[in-house]
Length: 249
Image (cartoon, rainbow, N blue to C red):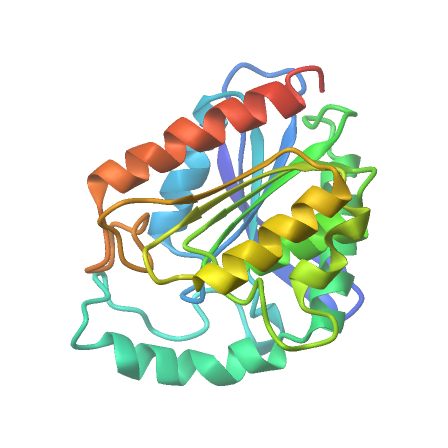
């Protein structure tokens, strides 16, 4: 699969991003992938290549581009439990600085970029997010209902909060189909109930699923949370969602 790192103009500068697409040429549906808190790294690039192999043009932006190109902090090849707290402590100021306003400005830029690429077909796109990226994927879809036809979030975080602009409070304008694949403990039963009620009220197709025997981060093979069977379940849910929502793009 052709791959490249490029710069996307945003309202706040230039966002570096990883891009990959099928070998076959022609035009393909666009997919915007928001990383987990650890950001763009080989693990995310491998997932992007896998998606491209199924016929999609995949964009993985560096969420922290305002602080520098990815990787913004030095990451070990394997983020084990013994080092994870120190890595998270380094990342938390970056996460906290990534406000909703910044998220929405960046989403505008990423969708504009996808729409302008000759390799991307003219129809709707999908947004996918891991960990905190799930909230970004949801915010992008609710802000751009005419452009986003599918949203998928895995081991999601920050979807249901007390904030007035919590993602779950904004889904009334959602038109995309949704799949959320949660680890056990990612969301409380009350939070899942609130989300499902919001999806029901919006009238969108959705599945909210707790993947058995998982902990937060289960899709990421460079962490101790990794579960091969849960990663496969993630592909088994994600690929049909993309196929039925983007097939005519």
